[in-house]
Length: 145
Length: 127
Length: 112
Image 1 (spheres, chains in turn orange, purple, brown):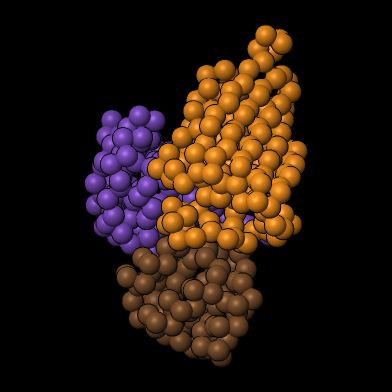
Image 2 (tube, chains in turn orange, blue, green):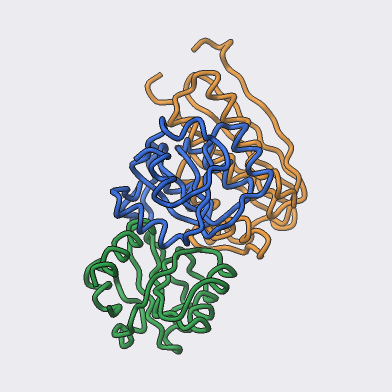
């Protein structure tokens, strides 16, 4: 892949807009598939962006999801203005959740969101300030290129 | 088994993807109402059995290249979910059987879990 | 068939309520939406789920379910175990997926 083949995109996510949860994940997945990114990489990106979307919708006023692809990796950044996470170690534990019933009725909020993002990432970073918001970065390597 | 056979076994109604019934085959399944669990553990090419009828069910299936969705407990998928399944070309079926019966009947016919065991902290493999 | 047979055949780990493993299992219910289980499960069924928070005990007790099997390697919350212990409700865990657990229990119940 040459440097001209680097590409990316940016999407705005509105908090509490549950009906469209997963839409950005679907759109990014289609784009990556069309560009011939390996299927397993595309699936990982789809899972990470899906959970990132659900997190922003569930816990923030507004957020942004950016992705960037080069010949080595797909980098995803999700930033939001929201309530933030008081204890990140706890939030990264499978099963730990502060979700309400609306989120649970959607089939989310069982404490698998951040663990899933971490699990499907080759590199993962998260910074959160209570009352301000959360920023997370996930890198998924494109193997064999 | 093909989705057509599955439809016959479960007396299922086909909501969309009629044209794919004979060509799409499934050998494995994942049953869950929690989409985060599906995202964590389901595998491409499996059948998703769920009672969750939202658009997120379909988008989750799309994220993982799941072969088809079977809504159980006699529930009707939300109109938006049907629209998205059509747009993304994912077969969507529904059956009156509860999830326990649905999984049990399909297991008897040879379908197996797309993942058998999960150990704490295991790194999910996406295949 | 009692819960003990299912526990032994599937190699499930009892987390609490082991003294009630002789409870008769009349059938099964699988699901993760509490309102659905509340509405549709029936007395004597064993409940297969991935939910772990303490409300599952309230649902199972109210509906007189024979026990709860938590699947996919998930562990019940501390509060869940404490509550189930008080209600003498068997809670068992397994690393098997829900589909596999249900498939195997379904076969056992048919043979019985």
